[in-house]
Length: 278
Image 1: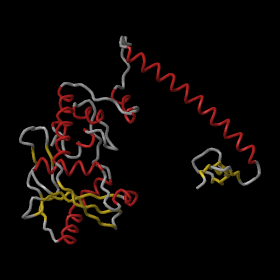
Image 2: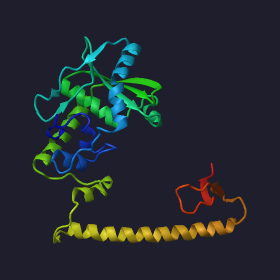
Image 3: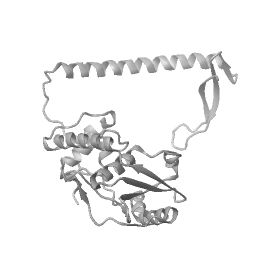
Image 4: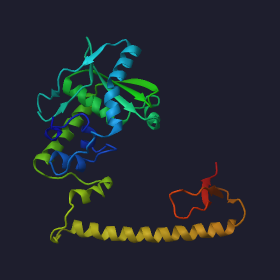
């Protein structure tokens, strides 16, 4: 299925500008065919996620007693044909659904207590709104060793906000109008525009101000970096061969650092660490 022709559950966080992985501009460039989606066919984490989906579903049934079955179809909004979703599992005899996930052990904190990553909350709420169901469950196998599952109740107001964002975004896709750029797009812009054409004249004051602000910011960064080094050198000189120095509010002291095997200078050294006193 060509994902360029619709907004799915895995897209909605990016559409709303809160995805940690994809910006609105990056998603827009994929939907408009200007860039290709990332090739995940050889991504081992994605592959293992697919392989373990059935395991996660079985664990959910074992822990909750709720029987699940594969969803027989893809769902489409009755009002907007480009708003769609896929569902991992349906809970038999109920208006509930299940989304199955896997995560590395490094992501365990994201699932602590009542926590659920915002991208997945938006995905499940999108699925509930599109399918007309009331309760969503999300089950995750963390690091292959820890299993957790949580419930997400359908939020009608949130879904209304999602629909509004999706309508606006799809209008930009159809009209080839790019969304506002974010800081994370800084490198992506080069990929989106790999060739340098002719020089263009910018008549707007907004662009003149933006260029001026960029130059001022760069100059400020250089000045601040110079000031930072000067202050650090002053503190280090005062500490000298001592372990550190304490003021009423701060403690600054030497800590030993190990040489990195990836650096040219392989000598271990010392760096200054500053902590605010409790």
